[in-house]
Length: 156
Image (cartoon, rainbow, N blue to C red; front, top):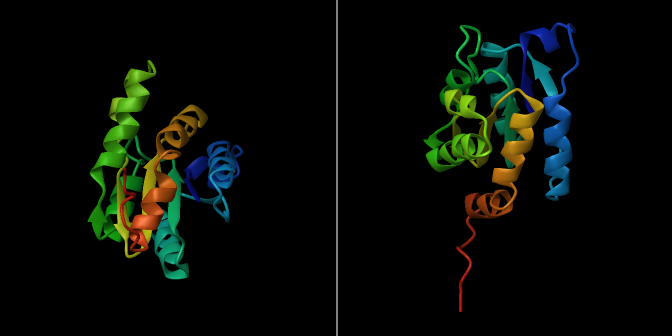
């Protein structure tokens, strides 16, 4: 779990999105480290590479997905992931818009696989984190099973 925030990393304010994601991941049954709070940009890439090296199943990021010049989390993530999983990012944006948050369409967050680690960028707001968990909770365990080589569930 990585929070990308220049101000939170500098101690200007407390990270609020990261703890929301930690709680949500634990509710899904994941063991969670973090949140690790780092400035946006290169430190995010380093944190993601370290998480992949450790072998985490999932790394959620929060923050740095907007349009400001300092929002560089998607670029840092893109340098780490091998394969994109565009449906996750599309679903996150669509859900936000459907919940009456038109600015959700401005999120540039991506999702992808770095080896066997699924990385998903979420917005920096606590509402964006909660919305992200609502989208991810029905599929995240299954996604991890798939990455580990599991088969699709059989119906009938």
